[in-house]
Image 1 (cartoon, helix red, strand yellow):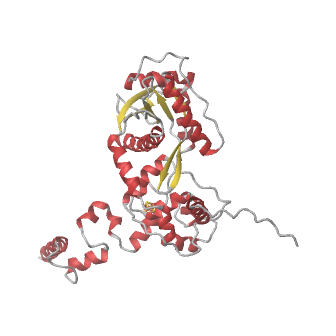
Image 2: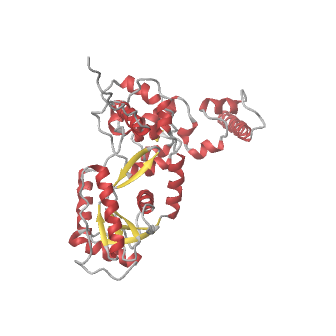
Length: 386
Ligand code: SF4
């Protein structure tokens, strides 16, 4: 019998493919598409870096909105259709005529070269297949724009950022390349800017998002020689007063950049969290609620009231945190004041004097407060009886 020539040895799975496979399993199989991580999610992730549950679910691309519904605690997130359409119409207006108005505003607030001449600025086509293809096309367009020495508007570019071991693809509203070679992130929002200033909370959220984009741009710039400079002021474009005319403001995001950089670096690697899960764990939203609850509870969470405005699982995690009497449900500042006391039960026991070290300042304060309360209640009862 003729012997068969040995074929090529099978390629062992690389660490990257093994992780992708594991994350697909957690989502419920290869037929469940991964939810892309957006800058809003990343900014929120960086705001609660201690939460392994969110890091894993976001890293695996689990649809947290659908998961929250399957768990029986639907999230209260979402933009109305009307607000969505109004936002899109405003963005289209800002970018009309080859971005003439947007580039005029960028030059007016941030300079970076001679005034742009309408019709003479470049708006490269960034279309490509898939997010990886679009990210590669964007990187090429950024390089060409920097070398051209003119004004270039990149409309909805695609940027890649490695987050806790998995790539996140991010799509800013726009990036402008100035004639001096600098790159600026542009955020277009539909909340009004009245007399030059807008709602501080909304501006803060926009700045945190923009910082995530600037961080991803830094990674693209680092691969060029010489590396172009990323401007640490982003351009926030909003409707002026109560009109739909655009106006803009330059926002310094250096603080948000350094916070986000530090927080993202501290995120526990997704593969380490996944490795600690029981065999067969899945967050497939088609599974029964009880099974999903067990899977979610298998990943440690760090609930804080801030989750209510940042994470789709907030109602579920709040209920669990309250059931378990976790002090974090009362807020991070209270948690910080209470030192080693982490549950409501421990706090009540310490206040009643049945447990806790009396030399612990938190325990001493709780006992003093309990004594004052008893005195006040006794005084009130005595005056009521008189
Ligand atoms: S809501 Fe739950 S999963 Fe989301 S960040 Fe808060 S604790 Fe983590």
